[in-house]
Image 1 (cartoon, rainbow, N blue to C red):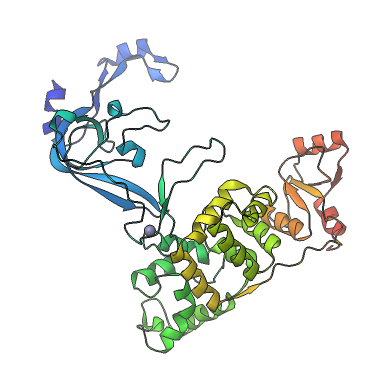
Image 2: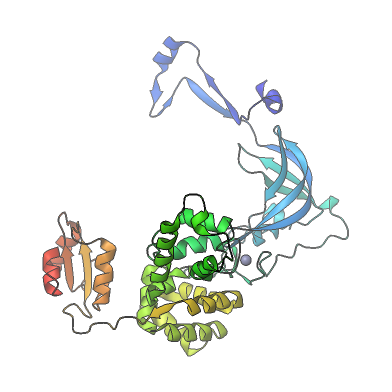
Length: 432
Ligand SMILES: [Zn+2]
């Protein structure tokens, strides 16, 4: 039987497909919806093996997620030597499933435990059971870290806004200081919606990070000085670089020092704080000083008036507020932000133009816009004091409809909402 040979085959299989050999029979049997009647798949049961947990390590991912990994005494399962198994999260180690249901009979996993592992198909091996009769007498429950093993920032678990349940994932809160996360943060920081530094894309960030030229956000702005001081091997001498391209990069970096508050906030890469939220916060706080002061107050006290004011900002919600609080509660982040601010000239938010024709109105964009992208349209409307919504309702004041507008246009007409074309929009706001 092929199943007995499975372990000694030179390749991985997870089952066998039996087929009718004769083509004329195949033709007579034909197909049933999508699958042929002349073939049938037989999956082998998952292969199991016993081994021991030698250690439990914590890995920190690019988004700060802490993933525990079991280091196993190497064992062969289905012809493959297995020495690691993912333990997913804290609850999983404690024997609790996603909805609090017991896993493995509710038994936790400890270093020194004898466990059953399984490989189903070619997925990552799983621990399916633990043999309590073999548990060493002196074993202790695994202590999941409350500080990041890489940067020592505090570890948090989010509360889901809707279900009020704790998220399964534990995260390092030190996004700007954690070497596991900083490369992603750097890429985000220079990206278009954030600081938008010309000539500094993902590839350059990868290169400079690799070379140790840029390790954290403020390093971007000290690059030119360090280059001049010969504190690093000159960028113009690097492969693919020259005098001009290096100078162009420094110029682009210097130009980016003067930055809108909304872009600065978004650029920090705080979880749940996207471009729209960045703009909302920028409009609300107005200046970087007020923003930072409020964030520090919120981080220190999540019951206080600043916290409630933050949640009450139009549609912002608790997930964003808590994420901001966690970020600014971590000293490692705050010191990076302070260094960064020393390099920047953050512009106050533009005062909302109350005098514009669309100020205070709820606007919906639909159809194909030809003179501006959807995000430009949204930003423009918000700058003029309008609120942009995704759907038409009785609260809608204005629908801007480009060619191909469909159901939203119909609904607006039936509700008697004012409808204008894209040109009409520009006329309305006085920019035609
Ligand atoms: Zn960390």
